[in-house]
Amino acid sequence: MSILIKNGRIVTASSSFIADIYTEREKIVAIGKDLQYDADKIIDATGKLVFPGGIDPHVHLDMPFMGTYSSDNYETGTRAALHGGTTMVIDFILQTQGDTLHNALKEWQGRSMGKAVGDYSYHMAVTDFNDEVAKEVVQMIEEEGISSFKTFMAYKGALMIDDGQMVQLMKVVKEHGGIVTVHATNGDMIDALIAKNRKEGNLSPLYHYLSQPEVTESEASARFADMLNYTGCPGYIVHMTCEGALNAVRQATRRNQKVFVETCTQYLMLDASLYEKDFEGAKWVMSPPLRKEKDRNALWSGINQGLVQVVGTDHCPFKWEQKLMGKDDFSKIPNGHPAIEHRMEFLYSEGVRKGKISLEKFVEVSSTNAAKIFGMYPRKGTLAIGSDADIVVFNPDKKHTISVKTHHMNVDYSAYEGWEVTGKTETVLLRGKIAIENEECKLKAGDGRFIPRGKASKII
Image 1: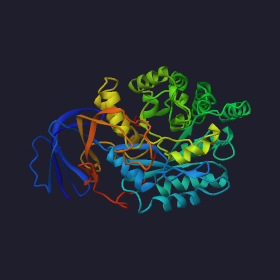
Image 2 (image 1 turned 90 degrees about the horizontal axis):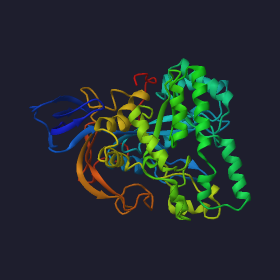
Image 3 (image 1 turned 120 degrees about the vertical axis):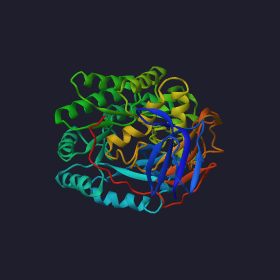
Image 4 (image 1 turned 90 degrees about the vertical axis):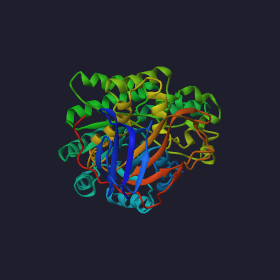
C-alpha cells in the first residue's frame, strides 16, 4: 500500500518544516513540498505534527516477577503502544541463574513470535556471568542481532551480578561492539532497609519508597560509571529517577566520559507523596520509586543539558488483584507501573506544551536517540528517505483525559486517572501500513516483527 501524507509539520530531532511524505513497500520514498504521487491512500495532515514512530527501549511484557507475570503480553502491550504512537519496543530477556542465554532467548521468542502487533527487539539481561556465558554474549551480538546487555546491581539471589562479573562482562561487550545497560541501585543497602522496616512493622507502600533513598541510586550510578570508565565500555543507565544519580553522571563528564541515561515519564510527572495513599499507593510501587519535586526538575533540566538522552516507561503492569499480594507487606507488592500507551502524549503535553522541551528534543528523546544508541538508526527513529515508514500523525491541540475506561493496556486501573492531556495520536503507520486510525487498531497479532540490531552507536 502506498500512502501520501500531505501538508503536515514534519518534525525530526534536528528540524521541523511543512512538507509531504510518500511511502511505499514499507519505506519512506520521498519527502518534499507538494509531492505528486498517485497513492493508494492520502492523509491530510494540515495543522498536524508528523514525526517518527516512538521507540520505547524499556518495557517488560509477559515477564515473570515476584511469583506472577506482568499483565500485558506481546499482543496487548504492543497494541497499546501503537495507540499512543510508539511503533517499537525493546523488551528484556531475563537469563535464569545457572542457565544459558540461548535458553532464555528461546523462552522469550515463544512469548513474542507471532504475537506482537508492533515491532520489537530484546535486551539480554545477564544474571550469571561466566566463561561460557561470555561466548554466548558474542554470539548474541554477531548472530542474533542483540547488542545490549542488561545488568542488575540489586535483586541479589535472582538477578544481581557482582562488580567483578560486571567488569568482565563490560570487557567482552566492549570488544565486540555492544553496550551494557544497568539497573543502578545498591541492592545490599536496600535489602538491609527493607529488612529493618519489616522488623519494625513498617509494612505500608510508603516504606517501599523509604527503603530506597536517593543515595542507593546515586552511589550505584557513580560506581557503574567508574567501571565503564575503567573498561572503556559504552554504558546506559535505565530508569534514572533522581538528582543525585544525575549528578554522578554529570561528574563523569568532567573526565570526558559519556554515560547514556534514560528516565521515564513517571519520574518526570509524579512524586513520592502518592505513596502516602495507603493502600492505593501500591499503584505506584516500582523500583526505583518515585522521588521529589526537585528530582523532577533536575531530570527535565538534564534532558535539555544533554545528560538524559532517552525517555522510556519501564512498562511493567500488574492488575489490582496482583498488587494486593502485598496488602500486608510492601515488599510483596509486585513492582511495576502501566505507562506504555501514554508516553508520547505525556511527553508532548507535559514537555513541549509547557515549554520544558522543544519539539525537536521531544523526537530526540522519544525515538531518535534510542535508535542511535541501540543500533537501529537510520532504519528506525527518523523520517528520512529509505527509513522504515514508522510515522505518527499527531493532533497538537486535541484535549483528552486519561482513564482506565479508554486505555488499551491490560490493567484494571490507570495510574493517571483523570489527568488531562493536550495532544493526541491520531494516525500511526508501521512500516507503511495503517496501524491506528480513528482510534482503532488495524493490525493484528503477528504483524509486528523482531528487529535485529547492529552494534552500539557512538553517534550521540
